[in-house]
Length: 281
Image (cartoon, rainbow, N blue to C red; front, side, top):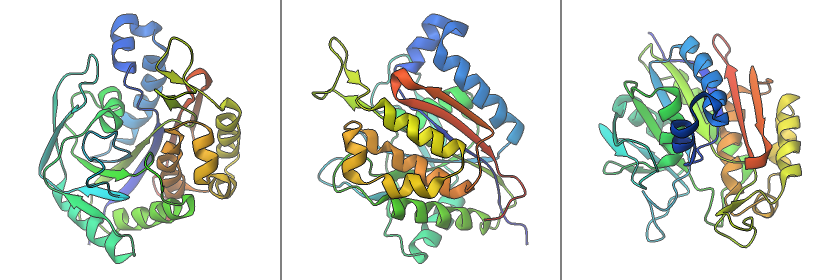
């Protein structure tokens, strides 16, 4: 029986202003340069399916129905449903067979996932895809993690989810090559009291982001998980819980130093890529 192969894992930002920045500044755009390096790695990995791991920003879900973990199982989705500046409207195929397999496997592993068959996606999923696979021909499986509305899931729970996700991918009866693209910032405040003067955002705790990257560079993932409490993450910004998306990615590969690790400290961001072909977890 042919089963799916996990070939690569990425952890990148999903900053919505990157799209316009790249349009205005071209090759001078820092975001465009960094994503170009990630895209080269992604194209070399040659995936057939992309599993996205990110948080919604009150566009797909709202307080009346806010899941801790969710997965999209429709045949197609679209976006950005938050009018990301400069981004075209994309229709994106969902790999429904994979989504249903992952949903069933993760429920079986003890994770209480919600599922949705009527949804659109925002910049959290689409900014990385816009830069990494702009033709949007690859089908996706969208997974959502609550990173912004307390109580957040525990970092240890998200790490366990990553391990369960790796097993679920490798037991999908398809022979497909699968890449996982997780996204989020490490220290970031949006529209809150710690935003910089004259800006809509701030980076309240660059030393926290720097420490995380040093631990990742040295493949000390357990240290990141143990220190990433809700209070510690939110000290680094009101959306710094997006580290949980990274923690899911770390569990998929770890412990292994990334092939690419690019720091973007003035935005509280980083870009990482792992080649996991031929490695079983």
